Each structure stands twice: as C-alpha cells, then as structure tokens.
Image (cartoon, rainbow, N blue to C red; front, side, top):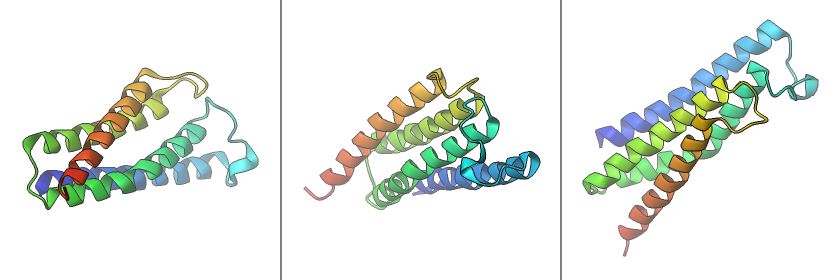
Length: 132
C-alpha cells in the first residue's frame, strides 16, 4: 500500500504547490480575478492556472483508483501503472509550466496526457476486475 499512498501524496502536493504558485503570481502581478487578463497563453499565471485546473480534474479520480487498488493486494503491473499515471501527471504539469505558449501542444503535455489516459483506463479495468 506504500506506492499508492506515496503517489496520491505526490498528486496532492502538486495541487497545493500549484495553488501556492498561483497565489504568489497573483500577488506579484496584481491579477486577482480570472477575467482580468488570463487570456495570455504565454503568461506563467495562465499556465499555472491551467496546470492546476487540469491536475484537479484528474487527481481525485486517480487517488480513488490508487487507494482502492492498493487495498486489494494487486498484481505487480498495477503498481507500475500507478507509478506511470503519477509520472504522467507530473509530465503534464511540467509541460504546462515550461511551454512557451498554451496555443501549441507541448511534447511533455502530449506524453503526459496519453500516459494519463492509458494508465487510467488500465487502472479502471483493474478495479472492475476486482469485483468480477
């Protein structure tokens, strides 16, 4: 159960760190309200807001999958898939934050997205398999 808990912890840490980064950037730029000027796809604040929103969309579902599967004494591939899903989310955040602009697909975001989809679907299948 250590791997699932560590991976959930990393997902949660990313949410809190991104939230903190956004607060710091809002303080520095004076942009408090989302509509004030977050349409600049090259702005670090815009990138951080999108990274947080994207992470917040996937982290809760992944956390449920990770923690549930961790209680079922899963096969080794499930643990590797949990690690892959977590690494995919880290790549996704890195892609958002390092992209020159959000108007183009960054390679890290592309790899992170595909990894998230594939590992997420595999983990859902593993979860369903526990009740069949």
